[in-house]
Image (tube, rainbow, N blue to C red):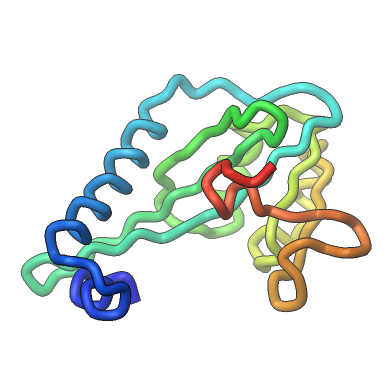
Length: 153
């Protein structure tokens, strides 16, 4: 659904604009990935996390790139990393390497995040199920800031 041809047709965009848009996205990912990797720290801070997949087809070959990121709601301090896959061991290792203990983590309800291992790593974890809500009406948990690229307040 994000191919150049699809974007041109369905979004009524010209070819050059679509290519520039895709290139801009790659530049942003690269710039964020090259930032100094400090942990987000401090008690009672809410960090939203999410993973995303980027695919690229060239000469009939596909390239898959997994990206994982987190954003601290109050200051927009964030991290963005290339990860080999989105398995639980990789995600947990990435989370514990970039988020200090005693933080509050908000995520979607993807099964890779639904584990007691986060609590064992001293991370308080809350989830929102996007099948039903993007903003949980009972708990207030949401991942809108990371989903929207830091623009939600």
